[in-house]
Image 1 (spheres, rainbow, N blue to C red):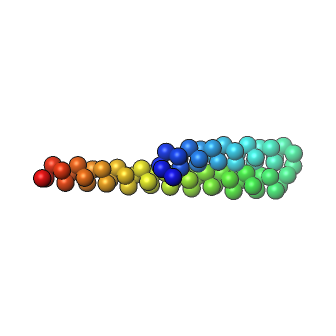
Image 2 (image 1 turned 90 degrees about the horizontal axis):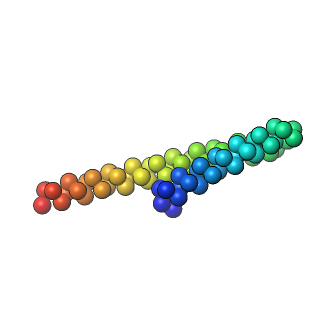
Image 3 (image 1 turned 30 degrees about the horizontal axis):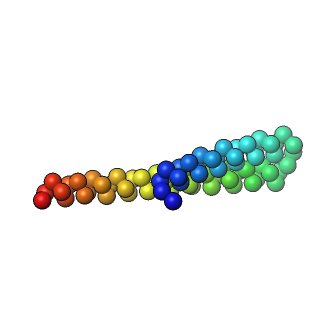
Length: 71
């Protein structure tokens, strides 16, 4: 996946996770609250992966530009 799709998936998983936690709290389901918390964490990780990929891509681009300037 690219950085943008990782970030988008992360945001979606965070939102779904928060919704599951809210529903679990409302209906008194510890299982659903736990699943929601896990999905929210998964979203956080996906966003972090997307951010890392974007940072690596940016560094590579800047390195390539610097190399081109030195030619």
